[in-house]
Figure 1 (cartoon, rainbow, N blue to C red):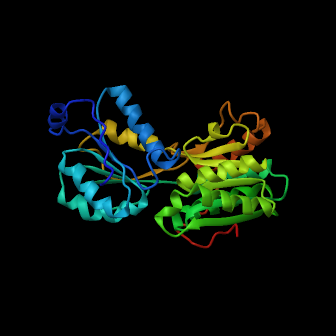
Figure 2: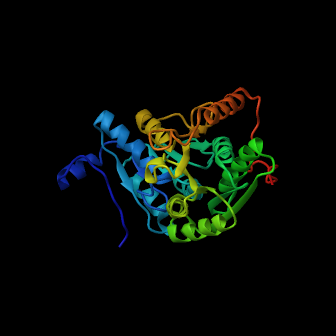
Figure 3: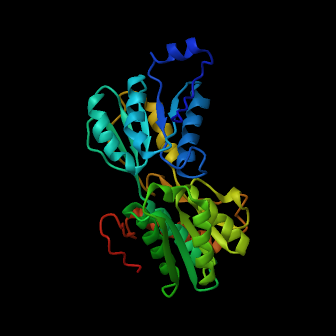
Length: 329
């Protein structure tokens, strides 16, 4: 049995049937689970913010297997959902197949580009946000070594690693940056046990700050860092609260804003490519009550100066996706 979940304001079967006639928006989560406390959960939070503000209803589907991608996207379109927000770069082929069959439905793809007239492609400058947290990692570092745990070894995640290393080496050119990936299949996004194993191996090599960009797998990284008494860095959502005092900061990727914006615009939203970079407020780093004692005024001042320089075009951060030779390694 497939695991299909719909969020609808109506509780009765009659209400559900009636709602299909309306252009409710929809959200299709990627593998890893809605409550991964990272990428998917950020999308959920954006949808819930829209629901709370508008009183509207939306549909949602959680996949359990990659084979469900096309089936579930079609199901949402057939139900009349509009727009349909689809999460994850691995759904680019999904929309290339499905979107042409529903020309009156607006689709939004998060994390990849599909060049079709009814698709908005939202991509993020992860390398810019990672540069900033790399600076913070180097400023908090005492051992001379920091590390990175990625999910799948793909250009998108390598862009996180490259930006992180660039930011760290801008602070300390001699710092050692260890990089490892969890796997080469979608299971890499939801294996916290393996994430913890990799983090512990990196810590045994001297890393005292570990940045995880691995979806649900990163939860094991954050736990391993706290257990070892070193810092971790969260990703996508603000994960500072998960291990207060141990999570140095989180590299924010405002997936929630992208989903919220799409739901607010509704059917017929503007399509094309939307770039969520530092200048657009699409990426950043988090400081709150859980980590503010870890980030000194001097650290924040240095990072804010770098942020301003990147936005102004005075500082360029290498994007691994456009050139796979990372200058930091």
